[in-house]
Length: 257
Image (cartoon, rainbow, N blue to C red):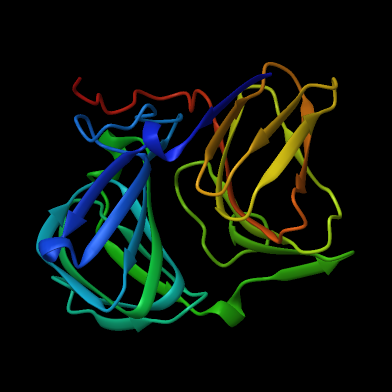
């Protein structure tokens, strides 16, 4: 297994609405400063914050599956399909852009915080599908709680969000120091963003690494393995964890250097 840890200085950045929305980008577009520009079909990941409110005007998308997951505050959405929606904390919205859709976004605080994450299906096939929009409330996502660890399944397994791209996602909070174990399959990659607290990881083979708040951790499995995640410094550790194939088996959209 290979382990890479990218601090915020090796992630991209951006802003909208004159700085009303500020983004840290674990996976960014070319030229935005991200050391990681894709992980298999995981194409883009922005962590946006708005102390009060910020607006992103109407803009187009095609093919990609775009999820907005709301940590705090609200995300307002309008699109060319006629949608006018509001998603609250713990909820999510998914645009499967297909043949093409326009949308606008407003992030409303105080202290609003969202992830916007893009997944890439087979683009040639996706362009033949009609665009869709769906939203999901926090209560629709399954929660598992055990020994001080809460696991919320966002994508895949028993979660309501089902994508065409092969992906799974969990929002995990470890509150009392109990470790949490994640399987890492052959030809699978795990992307982890520590959005609260500091932590450490240990592989089944005994490799260890520590990471800090806002760090982005990328692991690539060469064979079936596991990683065990634990909080450090007596903190509560919250992690967004995404599992995708390293090679999805179809051509991926080229990102320009």
